[in-house]
Image (tube, rainbow over all chains, first blue to last red):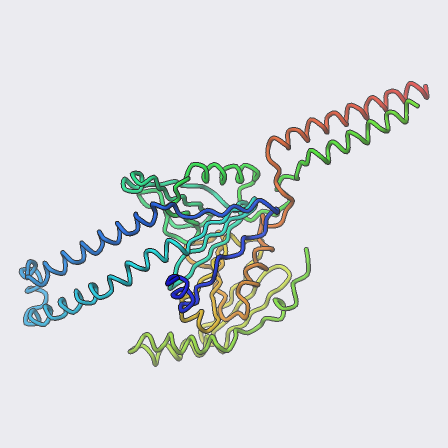
Length: 234
Length: 165
């Protein structure tokens, strides 16, 4: 109820249309239920770190460092630190609530030709990619995600940034299925889609794509030949 | 390939509300406002789009001229982005990536109907509209059926040859 109201105020668009594909091939995935728990946990950890840091700064744990940098400004810095900490505390209900909205307004769509990912509340982002352009897939899960049965699937196209130590890139040439609880099924689905493309996925024309092999059409050709054979016999 | 839809081909300039957004954007930089507003003012007034048969040409700037040409078939992925302020003004950005580098290769701003533009670009992208890829099983079945058809034809041809001879 409140979610819808906030979404209307912020003009968050409703569930996106699926990209064009064969009728009936659209599958919509959502982040796993535990993804919300994971986000709350991450949020709590972040705020705990911020609070500890803020309190440590105010109590002057780092005075021996800051004195050298700030000199006579030392006293002023405590005031700034108190205000900053107060702002973080005041923002906590909002940021807590945002975790829930972020979990709800998140869609992963897969058709037989393309995928579309929508996420974000303040800044809404929607990504569309065709499987013809996809280069590789990375499945990652941290220890906490693993415990909650979650994983991130990252699908990358050519030209992205360099992968980090965890094998994920933060560049724009990638689509992230964040916090899915059926990672293996989704990975297999994407891999199955990729199997139909034999080219490099680097802008070659579509004529390299395989021609659809419809059994029904082939059976029709067999039937036509069988009829011709009977006509030749008779 | 279908011709470019009229409402797409007729786009040459960003919509007026983009300038409103630029003013707000410049205001958000507070101290940087005088510089930002100047840059964005010229960016807005010199921005031109051409949606051709093959691709998009986008240009802006007078002193520092920029012109980007991008082929539809080379599009790798399409991002539709908007923040709450842009949405309140009815705006959205479309960022288009090719395989060339890290950041967006082209950002389309100030479009009247960003979703229609996204659908148009998607329809021109590689891999968006070719015939349905069949599953491997049915492809195998089709291949076997085709072989049977070839055998049947060979039988007919052989028989007709015998009859004539």
